[in-house]
Structures are given as structure tokens and as C-alpha cells.
Length: 462
Image (cartoon, rainbow, N blue to C red):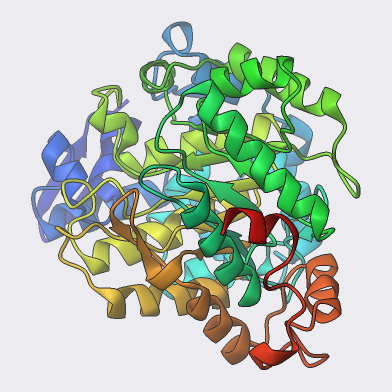
């Protein structure tokens, strides 16, 4: 059905809900590349006015990607919780925005509502919101997950220690591990992007990470971010797999381009759960997403990239993950051109994921050919800390030498924890104090007091 809005005697007509969402989306280069963006600022405003009047029920009756052709659409509609949706079922998108900004939308209420929201609903409402509103609502959402520690508690910020190396050299990885641990990084996960998906090489990295974790009794989890099929193979071989990782997207065709399906993810989830390696919980999946992934695979079905991204969160939600990470600026300026677009996209992703009940982290990052710099990332980092982001990346010098992009450093996490009064995961913080790395105040202690250097498996590899 068409949607309309008139501005200064000019009536804008949007043929369907998919077109309306795309035209209402804040400007980004990927939507221009796809030919779905509003042609003018006035058209965008007209689309936002029209979108505000759309009843939320329309999203249950007008599939953006055909039900019979897309398993993500089927997942979204078939698992929708009508009872959870009932309290807001009479709302329009604009009324949902107003309600989210009211005192009625407190943390328990938002948690109960999450199963009743579809990705398209939260994508729609995000397009009507200012950055401060995305931050304010996301901050109220508390999503707690557990494996060997507890993540997502209010007042806490975790980090993924990312010790990547361009040749998977054990000494280089060990050096980065030592560096990160001594700065209090690694409570979200000790996670390596392998330079190769070769099962033998991945297995060696898994055993290395597990040996370090066990030697020092570190209350965290490890992950080598290989393809899910490689991880399944290594599970069968008895490798020490804590978390199964996979990049995911918001359409069946985009996921097929990654070599995955919902059934494959289900198999991996069950296999990883069967290992029973968690100590305080059994959330075992780690997903990464990013605006533009469906478009880059020509699998976006005419959707704007932010709505596609939100649909990926339905895939993640199905498997109750420990971690979800929007790698927001990684795909490049073809999709998010500059610092302003990256900042906006990150706040949208974090808001949408948290509203849908996901433990959202953000890789505060950009590629070297984007119109962005570290000042932009400092701004985004601080905004996400205020918004209650679950975790960020910790990379030596903020410069990933294997993936060749700019992210956040161990020092950045210390800055954010200090200025906002945030703490690591409780179990991990207790370990940091035990090792003489952090003091009782949560501050970094002088290096001379550390107990970690030059011992056990770290000495062996470094």
C-alpha cells in the first residue's frame, strides 16, 4: 500500500513500507549506492512524518522480504510473541517513539516487551530519533549474559582482547595477550581473528588460548573467529571451544553468501552447548554484524542497510548469544562514508540490538580510506559508554595489524571506565585485583606489582 505526506503543497508518495523505511533513513553512502535513499532532505523529512503515522501492526502484515523466499522473514514472523506485543499493539511508530522516551519504558518493561518487537519495528522507530534519544533509551535496557563471567550488568563495561597477528605467530599473539591483560582487557572474550581458516592452525590457537586461561584461572572465555563449519569440525575433534563465532546478516541470501543457514547455526549452538564448558552460564554463541553486508552481497532485496542490519538481530536473538558485535565502520566508506555516518549507525545498531534483547557490543572502528579519524572514534566511544554498551574492542595501539583497520586500544577502555565510573565484569575484576593489576578502587596499579609477567604458557610463547 502507498504511504503519503505533504510538505508545502508537495505530496510525496512512497509505494510500500520498504520504500518508506529507506527514504526515512538518515543519509548514508550505502543507501545512495543502492539507489534507495531519499533524493532530498525534504523527501527524507516527508518520509519520517509518514513513517510516524504507520501502525506497528503493519509490520506484521507487510513482509519487507517475501515470506516464502526468505527464512529470516519466516523466523521473524513465526516467532513473534503476540502476548508481549499486546500492550503496544495499538501504537503507531511515532507513538512507540514517544512511549520509549517516557518514564513508563523502564528496564523491566523493556525486557518484557523485547519478544514482541520485530526488527523492522525497532529500525523504523530509530529513524525518528535523535542521537541523544537512541542513547537514552538504550541506556535503560539491561541485557545480562553469562559463560565464565557475567556481562551486561549496569555500571560495567567489558572488552574483547583482540590479539590478531598477520601470520598467526604465537609469539606475537602472546605479546598482545600479555599487553591486554595487564591493562585489564579481556573480560568479554579473548578472541582471535585467524589469518587462515585452516582447521589445524585454528586448533593450535584454541589450545594456546585455553592453556593461558587455565594456567592463570582467568574467569573469561576464549574464541577463535573461524567459520562455523570449521568450529564444528574442531568440536568433533575435541578442541577446547568455548564460544562458536559467525558473521550473520539480515536476509537468507546474505547469510548464504557467508555459507550459513539457520539450521547450520542451530547445529552449532547445540554442539557447543553439549560441551558444557561454562561455569556461571551457558550462552555460547558470538555473532558479528555490520551495516552494508547484505548490500555488498547484492542480497538486500531493496531494503536500506540499517533495516537489513536490524533483521540480522533476529537471527542472533534466536540463539541466545553471549555476545553480539556490530563492527560498524569495518566495511568501508562505500557504506558509511565519514565519522558522522559511522557514529549515527553505531548508535542505531546499539539501540536496536538492546531493544530486541541482545547483549550488544560495538567495534568502534573505521578503515583508513574513510573520512574519519580517531577523534570521531573518541566521540563515539564516549557516547556508547553513556548508552550502556556491553563491550568494546581492545587492540594494541588501536591498530589491527592483521585486519588493517583502526579500532579502540586497551587505553581507550581504561579512559572510558575512568570517566564514566564503569567496572569490568565482576568475576574478572576480582581476578585483576588478585593478580595485582587493579586496585580495590578499580584503577590500574603500577607494573611492579603485577604477578602475571614471565610465567607459565605466556613465557613459553613470548
